[in-house]
Length: 76
Image (cartoon, rainbow, N blue to C red):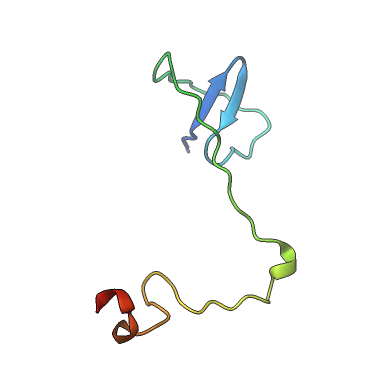
């Protein structure tokens, strides 16, 4: 099965922008999109500390707010 990964090639190094393939050796095909690619920092994923596990309570989310619409001061 073929799978695509996004990366930047910079001075002989491959900088992965998304997940890194889980292989130690593989045959690859490289497609160059542009000669002058701006320096893009790799995506830094935030990971909560392990000490918070089981201690966090979520009060609301994007779909349902924590307070009723009648209590929103900005709508009055």
